[in-house]
Amino acid sequence: MDRKEAIAILGLKDGPQLSTKLKDAHRQIMIANHPDRGGSPYLASKINEAKELLDKTDGTRGR
Image (cartoon, rainbow, N blue to C red; front, side):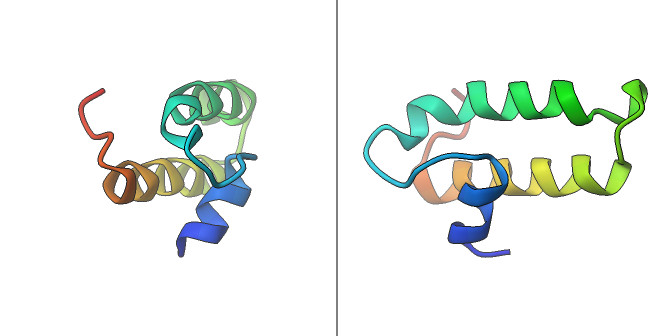
């Protein structure tokens, strides 16, 4: 997965506000797609992978 795909999965726009919106975007999309609530485990893993990639590239790990 590349940065562009990760941003698209989370429904974000690349820019200076990305790191501040990342946590909320991840939470909202996971609520809608969590496997415990009938969502797909595959989609949930891709959503988490996207967040992890953006955390690493934007230096927001631990926030």
